[in-house]
Image (cartoon, rainbow, N blue to C red; front, side, top):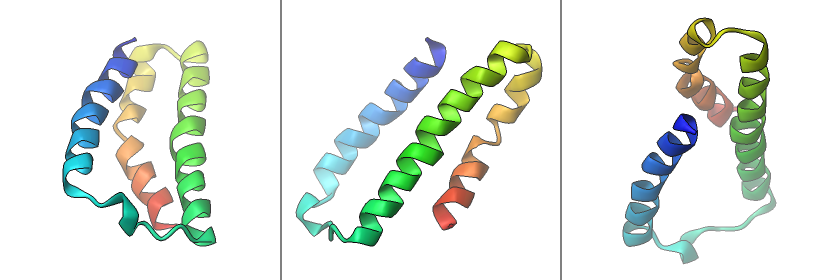
Amino acid sequence: MAMGLQLLIGSVPLAVLAGMTEDPAAIQWSFTFVVVLLTLALLGSALVYVLWMSVLTEVPLNQANAFSFLAPIFGLIIGVC
């Protein structure tokens, strides 16, 4: 619940800001763009969330929480690849 609220609180202002400042027609929907977008969405978000939840079933939260601070680093690495 707490993680979902954090994602919601962060995503709503970003969505509003993007809606006000970006032009959706400027996106060039190429094959490469779609592959990168799906890779980031599935591997960088969905898979990581599932793995995190599976880790929490095995490891106490106080030990696993330290790794949550590595999420931005992993996101940047996946984004560069």
